[in-house]
Image (cartoon, rainbow, N blue to C red; front, side, top):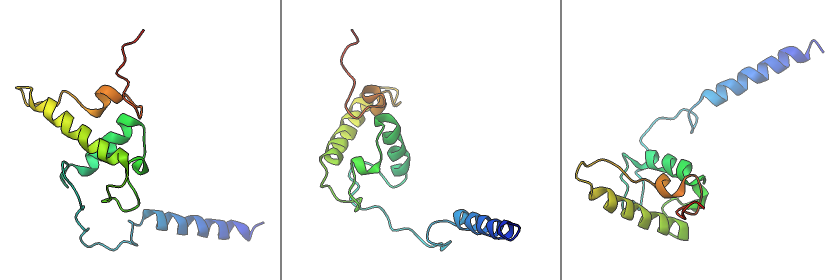
Length: 118
């Protein structure tokens, strides 16, 4: 039992070092720019992706294939149309602020929850 304690401690330390490493083993270097962006921009991409996760309660694979740039899933095409709609609606407000988001209609659900409460 006493010989297992140092072994266990060594494994924990090794695991901690691996977890602390950035993806790719700590190799820096430039990331490839995202492909196939039509509405979003590289500077707001991940902020928006996290917002979609919260607003619709979904994960990345809801809209994306393994090749993130592919437009093969209908949900991705629909999301792009919805982004255009939200951008158009917000563009009509004279103050330039964001009044409408995905959460406005979805409220954490995959399908919009726009029916009046009864």
